[in-house]
Length: 504
Image (cartoon, rainbow, N blue to C red):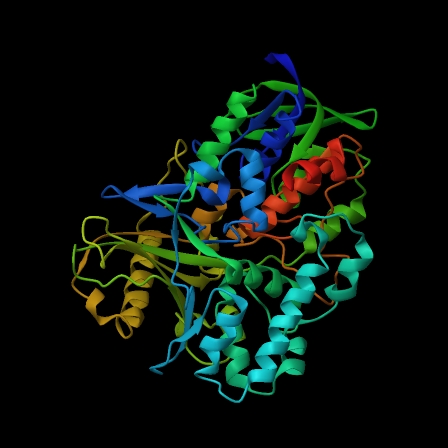
């Protein structure tokens, strides 16, 4: 079966990168079609509900949405910024970091001056170190031109891209506790000691210092309004439609094939799926075996276990910050945990009860979880529209993890005990099935400062009419993916032209 329409642009995958790129191109008069495997678009922006309480699947808070900030400008140009309902985090702490049974919860604050001021209360002798840390973060941001919505060249990024995170922190301060506090929320980028580049930490951290918000009632509002904008521009979204084949002939992609037997033709194609997934669908001699081997061999970021809780009204005080807990001050050890030690880290994300101000209605808990713990169910597949049971043994593991995680969280949030009315858990398999990311990797391919060329994925491919976008290109996160959408769009319309529109 073949569709009658030939599109100007066909986007494979309706995650944020795909849908935002589609909106930007449709604003230029292009006829764009987004093909998404899930019932719900948005990828990591998807939400779900338990007892009518909305939960975010991945994106619990967002940096850079404040007035004049980069993401705000991108979303304003896309036509959705004024539609979003935002809840600002506590100015004096968007995140707090805790260790073991220690009573201190170290604040990471909004505003560069305030960030330094809040930490000086705990580290009064580290004024110079904190000042240098902030300077380094700003320097990195200034060397990534698109993060400042300006033109630039690769040499700028190269000047700071070889800074390792652990090495840079050692240069800034010899206080190991301060180093641990500054990286205590590294679940935001799945950091790995001696591999994670400083720029990854810096760009993520800078965005939250600029401004930190939660989208109400959930992050799927972003993809919902982007979808509306795409429709207003004449674009098309095909949901519940998995792409099975990307067909190349005579050096260009001619069409894609779907699980329903459809052929969708286009002039330009953009992949918003993991590069490894794309290569699995693409049969082309233009893509060399060495490149396929390189992509298949890349280390992925770790995955996670998530436990979502509905709370008894009026029992658990609301926190207008997130809490990141690590079993020890060796924050890098969390990703390399031994199963019998689990959990060795967690993050808590609270949502306020609008009917009981000052109290939380729900709580999401995330902790690293290795895919190997659920790999025996690798052949199973379970998502909306393709439901399948994984059996009692799998449910037992989920329940055991929930009990272990809650017992650890009770130590710091004792009021939680006895006040949970419903709960729902997700494992790396859940992330894999809903986001299409191999092994449920939180942020796709692991960035390695020692292998910058190998772990950097370009927007362009060897096939002239096939581009890439999404979290594996440049940077992950809502800001990172949105900036990559600009870069991908610019390949077709010109960067200076696009920046002049986004940044008036």
